[in-house]
Length: 588
Image 1 (tube, helix red, strand yellow):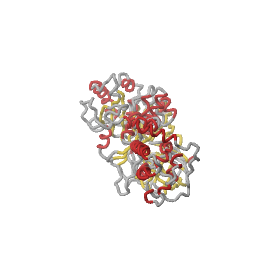
Image 2 (cartoon, one colour):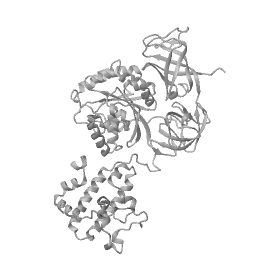
Image 3 (cartoon, one colour):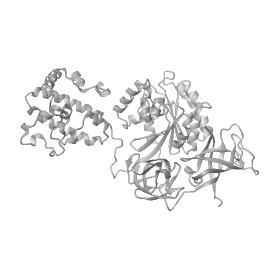
């Protein structure tokens, strides 16, 4: 690979010096002859339509002063070209995010027109030829480094790719954001130029290994501390599927954010660090590896990919023994959480920083014979989703932007533009003004897609995360009191009626109180006790009545699992997981 491709030069003059030393001397003479006091170039807004010089009658009378006053402009365009293009300097090209194909085509045509035109202008044709050759090479380099469009617009008749939401979970500093950032680079969603900028900035802060994670950690606080706080969002496409990356925070202070991310996911990627000491810290009692795996299962994630990261670390060096050691410790725990090791879990080694085994197989790792990570994601079987069910869209976030905009994952049903929907539990009637699926505008959306909806008929202040958009003919249930089956996972003392905790149900976070314990369920036989227990303790399963502080939207687990499973948290720990059995109507 040419060194030119890997690192762009500091200035194009330097590039010319290194590539064509003979032409450089001629260039200096050419630049010396420039009129330094020429008037600054002002685009002519009312200019005529561009006609190539060889079609013009008076081609010889082309003005040379304009070209001289703006070398950048002369490289790309002739003075008679539409002024908007002419005003574009390189700085503009990097900041503007237009579709780059549109820009490339006129650039190519103009370059060609310029070549025919150049020898006729003035006397120094050899110098111009040398400049022209350099220009051509510079244009080629420009084209190679042009960023990919963020999402390639599919042709209208193409079948829609299946949407899969992937959440990256695991202990803090396991490498979740770095892997996410590298996948985006490998699939062309982040251009090389941006990553080089991140690398320079990270080096200035003595954090050069963090630069890949900055593609997902866009917040300044996250970048300074190197810790993800909010769930980062990005997307990439493979041949068969369209993936949304949900980059969950690993720090225990931000577990509520992680639960929100996991509730939108179809598939979880548990990232663990193979580095000596780091895996043990994450997996022990206080580590987040255990808690995250359990919360993902509770949030309804059925399939788990375990990425054993940092395999290129000097303490590991792609060692099969270390890989097997991590695997042996994890499998019994994941089995206990509820994953089936044969069907639901897939282990694979990788390195997030070097990108090894993310897209291409690794020569240093002959013992791993499976597919690389991205290919494995693409080969997964399709998820079964019902598009005929009632519309259910739990709201994750909301903001104001030329109206009220909400974010969320469509759990069931189909939404289309200009449709009338009901916002529960407030029962506001709203209309869908526009619909974006992963920042691409569409007319209709199917289950599993991450959507941004612009709504009419409701103010942003009237919406809270946890509200649900429903179809008017089939509203979701809402209430405050419900009966649920609860498994106490971790609690030092006993739990009695009157105990308060924080309920995490789909995207809703609400304080609840256990008002009554109805019975204890035997874990092995499933038998329910005849008498009401006075208390429950760790590792017991019970049926209890819970009452929320405010009205919440929920369904029974049997009818709609995504809105019927929940976790209870207290003092920064996950106390219990449970499922809604019955909704209790309010007494007037």
